[in-house]
Length: 186
Image (cartoon, rainbow, N blue to C red):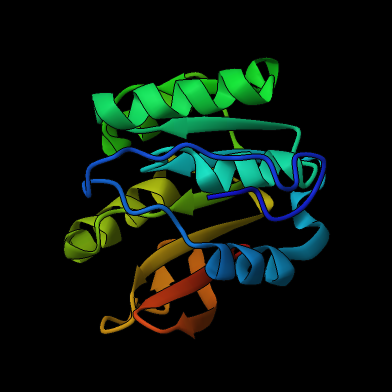
């Protein structure tokens, strides 16, 4: 698997050997970044369920300022750390080795907010992810002009509103769909 665009275009990304991590494919990554366009430039990115870091690293390659990666899998974190080291981007990253719900509470306590929040949980965790998005909204960790992007199974359709996060669009790519949410002014 390779980075598809930006300063690191063509560089190899390592992925775990086992099937427990499902990295976002090149076609979906290219479509996602085509849709968000310049929003990634200088962005603060939170990559939840980051696995090997394919989305967060792609964002950094395309001009994001920093990325915080969150995953609780030791195998995934080993590969993520290797990717960060091999690509020489450590100073633009931080890693939180916790489950997503605990990580959200932690970044809130630290006063952090993000321009882009990306979620790629296991597809079977659809209902839990909906609860997580409500938590992201209530903890107010998305900047006012920020976006939340959820990669999910195409067989399921998210709600239109989770707290202050409103679904603007959903794009389907075979078995994978990506839903885009913006923060609503209250």
